[in-house]
Image (cartoon, rainbow, N blue to C red; front, top):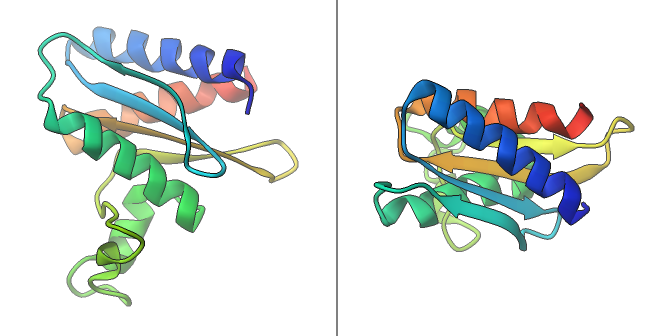
Length: 132
């Protein structure tokens, strides 16, 4: 993933967070789970830094949105406690996997600090900038 793409996604997600009037942390990781871009909006809890990063990391490692991963790794899921693997993952929404038009994994965006539904909406807004 190029930095210019990561910053465009970061900007789009930031705009959506401001539109929703919420303060969040937004993390974008590449396909190897290394950081590409991150912001923590004023007033966002410090814990959201790690949570947003883990949402993105979970999405990269399992090549699925963290909300979909939650269905598998939560109580009653087919692989309950899966979130305890790989150094710790996150089994709730806000991480969105990023793929090129040909399906190649590019990385993921993770958002934390608002409600799960708002985190998902913000992450999706950022991800939409990938193909804009």
